[in-house]
Image (cartoon, rainbow over all chains, first blue to last red; front, side, top):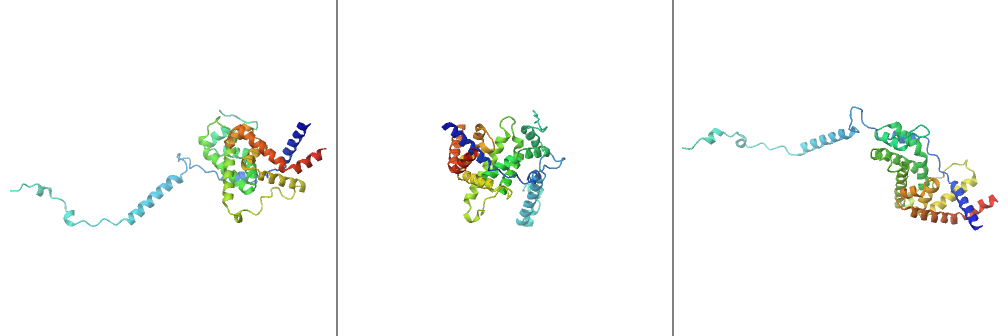
Amino acid sequence: MRQEQDERVELALDRLLDAYDAPEPDPGLATRIIASMPRPGPAWWPFGALWQPLSGLAAAALIGIVVGVALPSPSVADPDDAAPWNVAELSEPSL
Amino acid sequence: MRVVMSDGTDDDDSLLARIAEGEEPAYATLVQRHLNRVHALAYRMLGDRGEAEDVAQEAFLRTWRHAGRWTPGKARYTTWMHRVVVNLCIDRRRRRREQTVDELPDHPDPGPGPDAGLLVDARRRRVMAALAELPERQREAVLLSHYQELGNIEAAEVLGISVEAVESLLSRGRRALKALLKDEIAALLEDDQ
């Protein structure tokens, strides 16, 4: 008798839980999910998304420009220093 | 091995293999197949339709990213997907708790509109409130078992606990629900007589 009552209560609980139905998702949700899928790069580019190497190149170019502009230009060398060594003169034996 | 379902579409493992190759139709089939269940779980965990949609979107995006690393036969896709959804919902609930009361939405999502009968709607709200009163792990166990229709073994894998722990959570959760909903249960039993 007790067991039968417990079973009826369990079934009633299941029926009550069933009353909490979840709403259907928005009809456009599936379309939005599929549309938001990351697209691979073009067929001629087999290494995945094209924006990755392109942004790498752009970042490298930008760093190059910034460093090139920011660093001071090399000072003009002393004319004596700049003159090529006269190897023949240096190698002449002293008398 | 490619396995075809009764509706002529590939099974989940085959679809994931095709998704890993970048096949959009396979992704669309997988989304259509599982979206309702994924959304329903997220909705019941969060009580908010918009947030449930965000979770569903994020979960499927993770499927797309993860497909290349999927090992067929190692686990069921539905188990993995349920785990992703449960974790995403836990993260969102945690973030909500960190919000101040002022920032929280004024009212929970009302669910179905005014077409639903008043009695059904009142009952639904009572069940929703009773579930919300359960401790988090008990609620997750009840949701996975009753609404998602997962067996205890699969629910244990989703929650990352033992089968015995799932059984214990379910037992305590249902006992608490029976106490919280005792008036509604009594009314139902009375109607039956």
